[in-house]
Length: 192
Image (cartoon, rainbow, N blue to C red; front, side):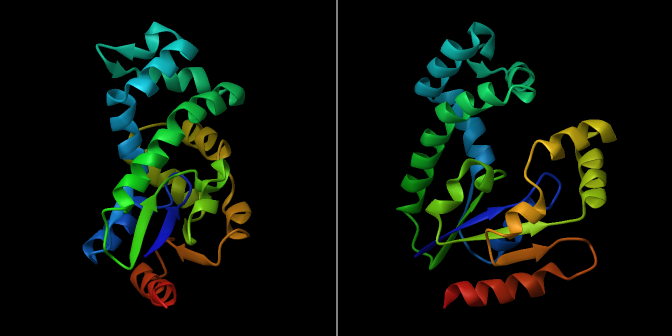
């Protein structure tokens, strides 16, 4: 079994690619969804975030995502500390999930595999890329937010160019090139 990371910047369409992979019967672990679940349910994460950020980090036992986002958005050191609390538990959750899979390829869909160095734990990484202008439009439509807020979020992540140098598998999700053909070629290489 090969463990494959699936990543891309905000608005790149990595979730759409993950859905295609799932429809093709490949197991997909959705890191962001599991991270949200574990942040609400895991006592180690809860206690760590409360110790770091204070009681306001949780409301009625649920992570106060708006508060936490505001705390870490402009504070890279604090963001790193939050990631150090959450990521090891999500990583173990993925490993537990992976041990139950039987497919030749399994995928871990996650936004910041390169930024956190987590890409090292995979046999390969598939990067989903799209022009920044396309990504901005997608996120504005999806999240009903301003162009400037999307640009800020994009600037907090690595560029596609930085990520491309770390993987040989890239899906161009620009709305012009058929993604299925690209994906099938990549899957064929990964299966061998």
